[in-house]
Image (cartoon, rainbow, N blue to C red):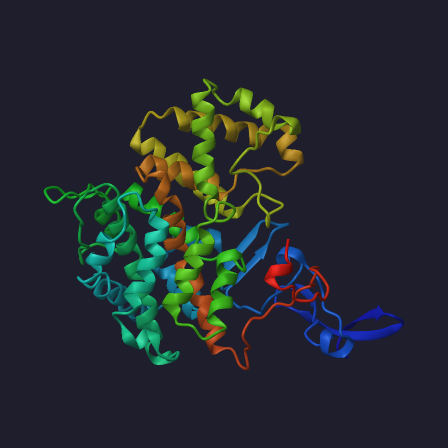
Length: 429
């Protein structure tokens, strides 16, 4: 017998099916509640609402578990590349050699932008934010591939996915070069995905950027760890847009706008801004830690704690080790990194932070790594968007291949004025 939940409203009992996921997650299916009772549910911020069934990513925030298609993030971080992980997330299985080679070849074949797009870059002011450019140029680039604008076609989806994943890094690098008044550096087919991005970011026409393996690996790991994270704000945005049958590029451009917000993709920027503020105050972090414990001080420890995880963010454990390794290799002196280590030490050993489970999260360490690599603050969220692209594409694919999926249309509880009469302009005060 199927399990049901019983809800009593005005003396009448309604039976609602209970749905259970493959990892034991339970939900009450309210999809027929309004039709049966005239009532809807109210859940501000969707904190208790499942918007879909998905087979992509599993998170257990209490236990600190993150898996892509069932594979623990720890295994992927140790053994896989970002491109291999992207394929897994989008197509549901680890690629064999032939599949991985074909997908990698598609990334290489689609790394260039149409030359006419250079005129679009020239139209942005020098101080334009890279995220604004990224969103606009993703949409603009779709115009040069008319098949993208047509109905969803499973036969060409792999090409479209590879095209988007490949071009997003080229757009991002070009946007950075423009913001610095530097000449555009074209991608090189001999370089792999992340190495090519670093080449386009930091090479000069007369000298190629030195691609240290530790730097390439660190940035590739950042991309991999951010590749998907369940139904967050930007991913939910993709599914919302895709439900209208909009094309892949339009849906991704909307997700870029969502992730731009400081409460989402901007969190790693706030970590570095916090460190800069501490340094300007002549503090080594000790005074800031004391102030963070005082609710009245107004000081907030950025990069610690997470809305989903009530345990140590599994991505943070992985990236911390990479961060320590990278800093040891680079041997760079940076007072902000010294402050970061002081904050990390306090959070891992101070009872105040331990009791509140305010562990360093992935944003804390990714911000430090990107600063060490030389990626400027305004590009931090762009890095997040590049890494998250496979997850957005995978969620788009689920919407398009879903049977009987309807356009997303949340309800609301209206709290505005009741009926009023129209007042002629002459009678208005």
